[in-house]
Length: 585
Image (cartoon, rainbow, N blue to C red; front, side, top):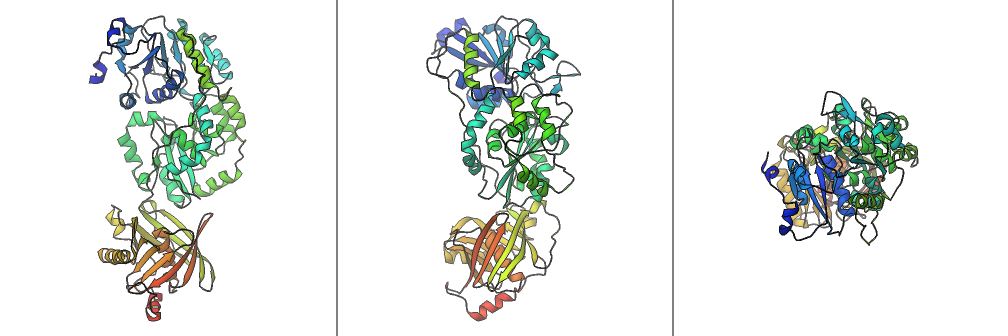
């Protein structure tokens, strides 16, 4: 046992002299896995809010294969925690858990078991033997002694349980789903969540979600996040990954970090297993999932869903199983971007209403129903203030930083006099293959000066500074320094007070400005200049409209002289030769 498990928490009658609050009832929360603990922590504070009559203590059960992270979560929340064996000494009035796999000491106190997913829709390995058991089902001993109460979210779950476990008859409580209610309440915060996650206007957020086990999405396609990032332009898409807490607990954050290292460098946001998946789901434009509950939640709040895996452990005739028959599939062997576009285009908001109807029997009433249940089991009158309904989730942790190095593709799509239209597509360089160019279509490597991979910076055609805004003269000096420090680069771009400054190796400095954005992205500014040079056009007095997906940005290019004046015609002519630029960079 670790030191936290040896601490004796005074909760018995003799401990009254140590207390400040004279609680009339003792509730023990069974903390066994992160998955189940998170669900209880989400609802118990609301159910018991402001009531000094009820004392809550957490009992840590270390017997689960997925107990890693439980103590850390308890500490982070400031929970008073006792070792599991002490439960036999404290005579609780009620035990609450969202982990059904409990071995409780003898006693006559009731046990309220909350679901930690949607219903009873998955067969999982049985820790008591070599077979499987129904997820959410308590041990027979608790049913036989009539101590256990099972909270359900849909009346159909009563019939399902009665057919497979007759002892559950009369032991279920129709509560609803507090997580689903909170997801619905969070819809108005969607744009706030997107902003916090770093999703820019015009970008789409693709969320990958996976349950645990070898037949899960993560088990079948661990490289899918990187494959998506390699095929989806960074200006048009962000990608986030939600892994079931059992994946984190079973393998460890270090292992997951190693498996997704390149994807994270390419901009993948990995969602905290204890907090944030609900916000990511609300913010998503499309969800790629499997037979886990998060995929069903995504469908229930109207998100387009693609299935990339669906394990045989899914239970037929459940809501999760129903999703399998109506959701389209992602073929990971075919190009991914086109399938995602089709799923977004073809989606109907009411597509998954039949699935939702099978999963949730009531909406918006889970917390009031749960509070009534808890106080009935405690044999206490409910507090006078009315029960709260669902609250929106708070803002999530910031999303991952965009990749520092990009393969930039530009294609000339239109030209009229000194105005050019150019399609821009940028992809993470760490996932890129060999450059492919065609007539009027070019590629180059652009790296942020902060890129730690020197292999990339030493090969870059364009060096960028995006972390600060320079005064004009300072910005010009910085571009000169960058080109001197990186002899393989041909352009250097920085943000300046009036837009962006792009320096060329022949000494030319260009100012790139936008009427819509005082300070455009230096990478986009450099892409406009690079395209002109590859076309053999002097980048002075030129307007370039860059298009990325549905977004467009108009940029004006102007050459500067030594003191900031327009450069001379002779100097401008020298830029048109694009001296030093290879045929393919």
